[in-house]
Length: 187
Image (cartoon, rainbow, N blue to C red; front, top):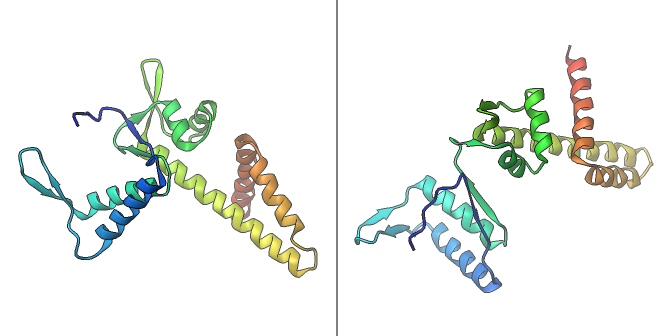
C-alpha cells in the first residue's frame, strides 16, 4: 500500500458491510482489554509500539467507522480555506465570511485568499455546540416549567421542532439575541 497523506483533511469512508463493521467492533474490544498491545510491523520487520495518544486516535477512528460513520482526520497546525472551514463547521461558505467579519474566526489573507487556523475553526465548532446544547437545555427547562404550570409539553415539542427546522442564519440570529440579552444582564 503505497499511498501518501498529502491532503489537509483525510476522509475515510465507513466499512462497506455490517460484517466488516462487526469485525472492527471486535478488534476494538480486544484492543481495549488491558492485556492487548498494538504494534505496527514495518516493511523492514521492525516493530513500533503505539503510545496511548496514537492508540486513542486510532480507536476513535475505528469506533466511528464501526458505527457506519464517515471520518475526517485533520491536523490542527494547518490553515484551511473558507470552503474547508465551512465543511468542517457544517455551514455555508458565506457564513464563514460572516464569522470572520464578526471576529468569531481569525483569518489571514494570503494573496487574494483567506486562510483560517484549524484550531480556531475547531474551537468555534465547540463553542457553537455548547451554545446549541445550552439552547436545548433552556428549552427543556421552559418545557418543565410549563408542564408544572399545567401548560403541557406541546410548546416544548413545537419549540424544538422550530429550532430544528430553522436555517443556520435564523439560528445564529436567535443565538445573537440571546447573547445580547445575556451581556446586558451581566452589565
